[in-house]
Length: 198
Image (cartoon, rainbow, N blue to C red):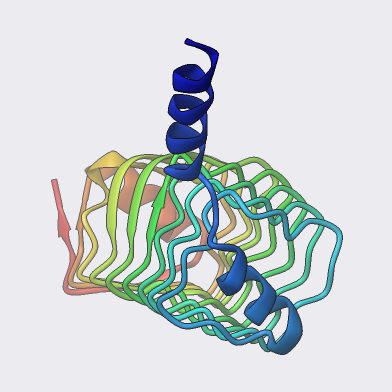
């Protein structure tokens, strides 16, 4: 009975753990594409310039880490922890960010084109100069975020909370917003063009 229980625990845990070879490869070279790094701990480290395209980063811990100018195109980031992380000027195009932690996170200048945000609530978030082109938002809270110079194009704002966010000189175009959101963005001196404000 103990043997069966041990095997069961091993199999279940392996379903939610990173591939050790993939992790070793990444730690050595900062380059691991299409890798399984789920639940890996990258906290309190510098991985600037990392390449992680199309990798599984679900549950990974990026807390207090630096991934400046990194390529995370097409990664999966469900339940990842980005608290106090610096991901500035990185590429997260086509990525999925679901249930992530993002308190005091710096996403300044990040490319979020065609990315998907689901159930994300951030405090003290910096998305200055970030790009959101055809980005999808579902139950996302960017209230009080720093979003000056950010670019939003072809975005549906209906599930995105931007209350109190700084949008000075941000560009918002071809997007769907509420009348209240449009009025707020005008007050924030955002640059609006060809939007549907209802």
